[in-house]
Image 1 (cartoon, rainbow, N blue to C red):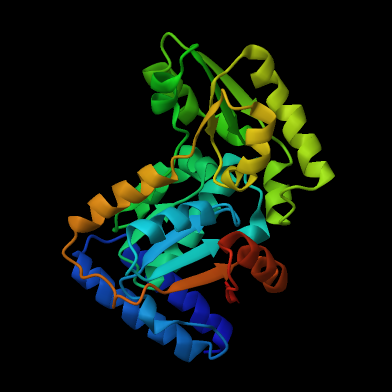
Image 2: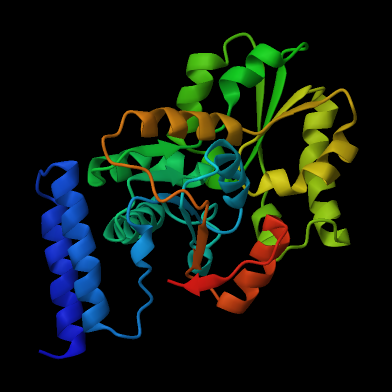
Length: 309
């Protein structure tokens, strides 16, 4: 059988095994063996054996680094593996079918490496695909979502702005959050086209970026919203400029710390052991490696090596 045929057989085996019920230990051993088999089939592939037991963190692009930063602060000794699906970003203008497909594909890749938990650090993927990922993955999946509940409790004027992608704003998940927690408040859903793309390019303070920020925040300013929810993990990197536009009376909510706390809680319930304790991060991208390495190093605030997925 040629290499292509072996790869197809490998994919089929993984798919079939994931569909069966097994214990976490059986699953972990299976995925470790499968990763070794894949490396033998394709010597050019990059397989990092020390990802066994790591924490997988996934976003449509580089924005989830804001969540990775909070996780690193909460779990300083864990091995973290970050996947940026930049080759298929942004998710905000993609179909639900596309987002579900990409989320499951990256989730499968992480499970093949033997991660013991997955953090979905993408609001759009959460509101569209988290149910499918949780049904698919036999490991804990911790997901981020727009922090509407705490925003309503913090607002003094009853006005809450939610800055997010178009897909997130239009999702049933956000509608459900508003129905549950938005009673008595004015929830202003503000789509922010173009913001993700600017962060993906590392253009946080350019004239074009500031123009987009002014355009999409003006409705919240006009409405007097005093709490703004960062409903996309890319947006915390725009926070300095957003604070200048909003003024001191506006509070911002970034749910990354809450995600890190929930991940810590879920990990404490697992029987599988933690990784070696060196606090290592591995970075992968489905996009162009050189561009990803430059932007990730900028946002992570130190040089990082990015591998191709």
